[in-house]
View 1: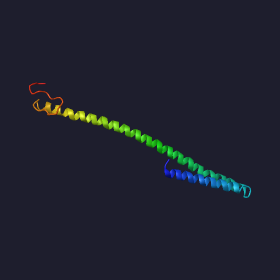
View 2: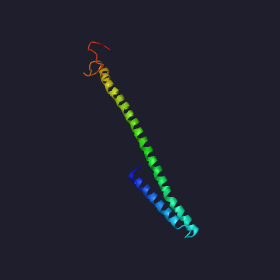
View 3: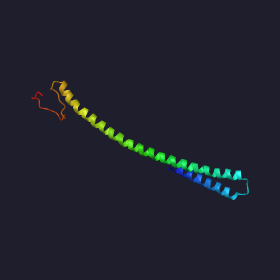
View 4: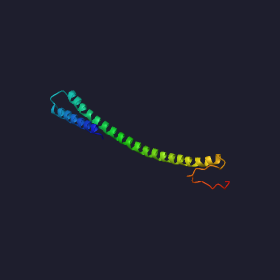
Length: 118
């Protein structure tokens, strides 16, 4: 839960407690409908507390999913890099093939001697 969410939860709790205190203090001194209205008003901040808690849980879930997807993307990037490396290594042999076996890169792992006709 973020600092702002914690502050809001604390504020909601203080307001709910204050409204509850006012409801109890005015019990019997005011008409019944105002007491019921104050009771309902003291429950409204509790809805805010539940809302902030749900939002915090959703943010946590999204963060976990983003991290997991980031790891998957990194794995896919590594696989793509390996495939690209294999393509680059094979390009030398393509050059060898298109030059009728007369040219070969010096660092090629598939380098054959000049006398062979493979």
